[in-house]
Length: 197
Image 1 (cartoon, rainbow, N blue to C red):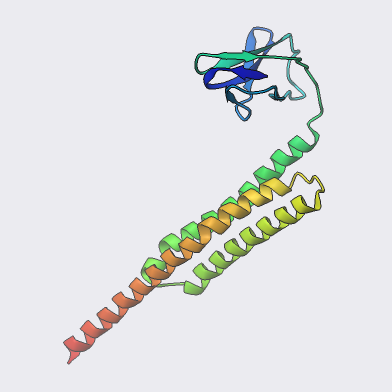
Image 2: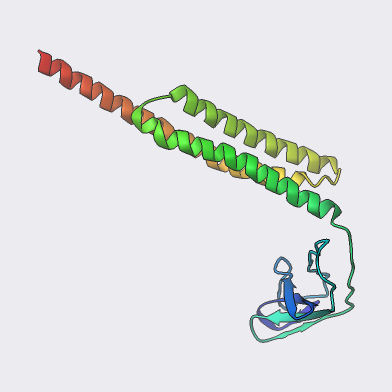
């Protein structure tokens, strides 16, 4: 595709018709704007094994403002899912695991610190979550640097970055809650002591 004086964004879209039903796929990750040279872009459409017979495919462009998009050579390619499906499954699995760890930390950190209890448990879960995030980030970077083309690299890097950005500030929040709980406990002890005296 090539954009000429395009105000806003433009992208290709593909409509697939199955009998009386039509569904679309858009290349929102490959938008063009302004004046560009020729560039390749693609938009996938996932066909499940039980998908009805595909009757028609239409390729077009969607413009979000005035201007022109030119389409050069277009090809319709049918490929097995292969690495893309594996990447999606791996991403879902990593999201489930890291989401579970994050959810567990959220539960224990939301309940125990304000009450000044189970500090070892809360900090242990925090440590596991941070260590898993660092391991995921390092593992993803190693896979990428090795140039193995492993589909695991990008999901690992993503969850690693999220964890490394999220968990250190949460440590400070939890520590402050424990400190505040300790101050309240000491104040209550001082009040009890002065009342006994």
